[in-house]
Length: 73
Image (cartoon, rainbow, N blue to C red; front, side, top):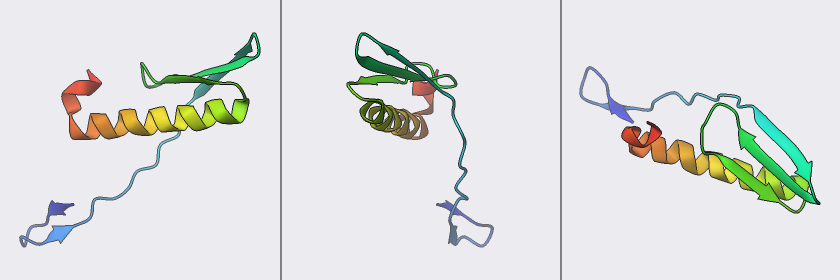
């Protein structure tokens, strides 16, 4: 939320962005990373587990970048 011109609070619009997940399977494991966000990667024994872990890693990275913009650097 931020303040509007009258001093009241207004909600910021939510922006949904699509990200590119690069996915590979090797030696019985699934690996993935987000092309647009360096350092966001994960693995899992199944594709579904890896995707769940990858979504969680992306969510945490985006939240950290929102709370500390210098962390995106």
